[in-house]
Image (cartoon, rainbow, N blue to C red; front, side, top):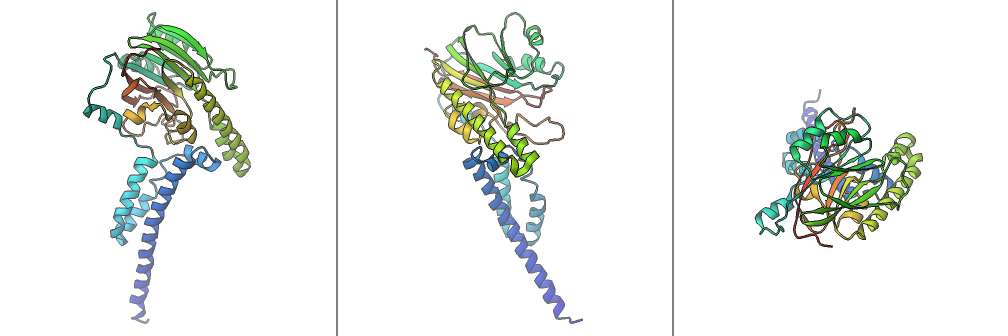
Length: 354
């Protein structure tokens, strides 16, 4: 054996690994930034970005299990790049929220109007039976002023749970319960929906700070479009586009309907739109997304408890219009549904006169 050739071969292999480590680090960083840009710019614009928008986010940190050890062993100087990529995945790509509005209000002068806050709870309770007592415990602990449930709720059970002091209103697929007097109801009829699903309904309520319009919503699901791609691959693209177009129209029509409401508005429910969605940003960015403003963490509301699918996405929202400051927002515990409840404390900043 040629003794001189052995060190040269070893050096060649080290050089290959050295270059591979650098390529992995830079390729991962580029992939992370590209995915983030695709979500921010194209989420719900094109069929493939819609797939990316609703895909599990937990897959993005997985390459770090290989890349980080390789870089530490062979390209330690690129550790900063891997660390920055990991931070980018954990924060903007996976949707980590910091309660900036809550922090800002804590250090700024108090501009609240001195009125009692409005505590809101929303939950898509799904089709399966709820966990016994879980919702009752949540309501007893958090004492919401307004509750809205979507899909298959137990109306009689809710009446027994809440008691006679609560006013409970039911339309197909949506329940609203409140201790505030309801002085008007207005049903959204601008979009075709299945007989079991109310798209939205507005309840004008009298509160200590004046009248408010509480809009309970359940927008159309992206499931059919995603299933078309899953089942038919590229042949399902047209199905995805049709689903996206329907969701786009429904959200836009609802937004125009909400614009004519005269009071201070709260919108709450299963919107089936992540915050990165171009539809969500176009139609609802004028509202304060309660969790984005005053929540901490990822705030995933769907997917936590779906059997066999470990991922989460934030598609249930509480949106506060002008006249409210979000004091606090959080995701509640598992109550038996594949969605988790969202809660928010909204502080009136002035009397809500009409």
